[in-house]
Structure formats: C-alpha cells, structure tokens
Image (cartoon, rainbow, N blue to C red; front, side, top):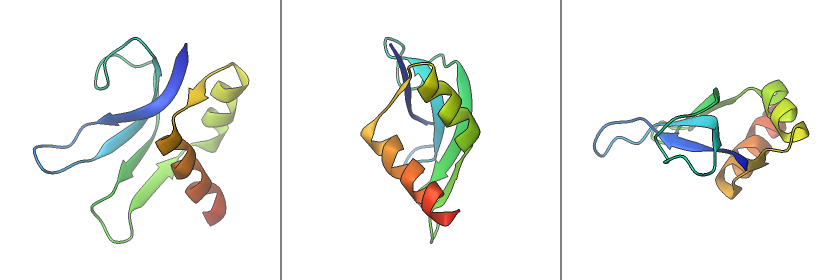
Length: 80
C-alpha cells in the first residue's frame, strides 16, 4: 500500500519533516516515491507547505494519508 507520510530529515533535537509518498513497507526515512511538501514545527508559526495538486493525484490513485498528514493538509486548505 502507498502512504502519504512524514519523513524526518532534521538533525539531532532539530526535527524537520518532509511530506512524502512512500510504500508502507519502506522505513520512515528510507526510499520514497515523491516528496510533496515540508513541515517545520520549530518556527512560530510552524511552516507547512504541501502541494495539494499532488496530494489529490496520489489520493485519487489510492494512497492513504496518515493522521498527522491529514492534519497538515487541513491546515494548508484552511490557509487557502
């Protein structure tokens, strides 16, 4: 199954995440199919950038977003 999930890329005690499309069997920070956004929770306000066109494409082809990614998508949609 293909999932839309977060992959951690920041350093030690410096979490920064990418929103990626990956096979559910691959490791969290391992191989991914496509990077479709980024999320930095350390800034105030948090930086959330997600390409909604690509999210809709992948959801249309059967990808399942994780609960954390669903929250980020709602934030981006609310911003307009």
